[in-house]
Image (cartoon, rainbow, N blue to C red; front, side, top):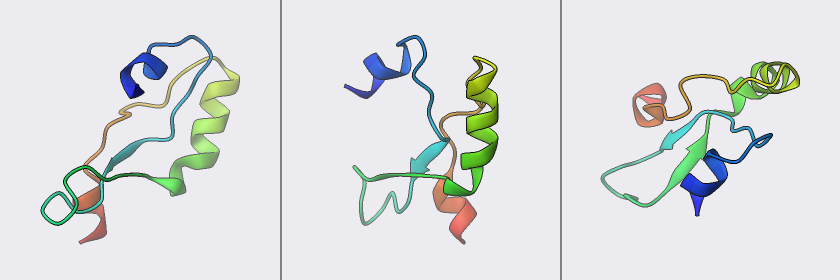
Length: 60
């Protein structure tokens, strides 16, 4: 389960959100342009914030 992973120590997530909440309400996609920034933060033991983003709005 995703929430269990999110609370696990040393597991870091690229920010993610719904890509199309109307047509695909159960679909989540990562904001891959944040990969490098996420890796840098994880090396410091930090989770890039916010983890949940409004991906759909980014695509419009």
